[in-house]
Length: 117
Length: 111
Image 1 (tube, helix red, strand yellow):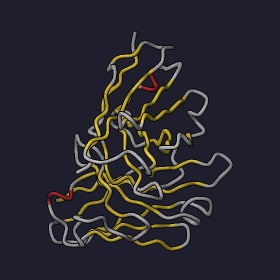
Image 2 (cartoon, chains in turn purple, blue; image 1 turned 30 degrees about the horizontal axis):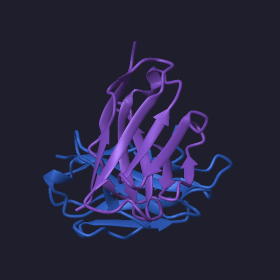
Image 3 (cartoon, helix red, strand yellow; image 1 turned 180 degrees about the vertical axis):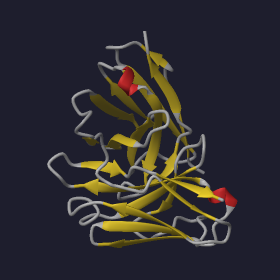
Image 4 (tube, chains in turn red, purple; image 1 turned 120 degrees about the vertical axis):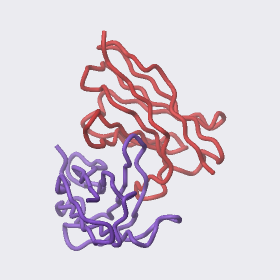
C-alpha cells in the first residue's frame, strides 16, 4: 500500500521560503507524476504544481514565480519550495500521486504550515 | 476564484439520492476529463471518481459521475450518514493560464 508523508517546518516567517518534503513508501516514486495541493483553513483546494520523476514540472501560473519542485528518486522523495511567503500562504499542504489525468489516488495526511513572524 | 462552480451545499435523508453539479467552460470541463474528490472532516481528500465516470477500487457503486458539455455531476444514491463530507470536482483548464483547477466545493449534509 502506497503511503505519502509530508514533512517540514510548521512555522515560516513572512518573506522566507517554505520547504516541504514528501516521502513515498510502499511503492516506487518512478514513472508517476507527483503533485502538491494546499488548502487554507475553511477554504477549498488549490493545486500548486506537479513533478514527474524525470524532473519535468508544471506549476500553477498564479504561483509559478515562487514555486520550485524537485525529486530525489534515490530517496523516494519529492519536494516543494515556495519563496517570499506571506500570511496568504498559510494552509494545510498535501502531497499526492497522480493516477493519470491529474486524478490523485494517494494523498499524504497533510501538514499545516503557518506563515507568521 | 475557482473557474468550476458548485453549489455550496446539498442535503438529503438516508437512502435518498443527492446530485451535485459542477459548471465549467469549454476550456476545462468541455475539453478535459473530470475528477471528483470526497473530503471527510479533518482528513485528506479521497479520489471518488476519475475520468468523468470511473470509480477507483473500493469506492461504492452508490457514487457515480457524468459529464455533458461544460458541466459535470456527481450522484450519490442510497445516501448514508458517512457520506456527510465536502465534495470537489476538478479538471485541467486549457486557458491562457493553463492549470489544474478544483471546484468551489459542496458540503453534503445527511439530515
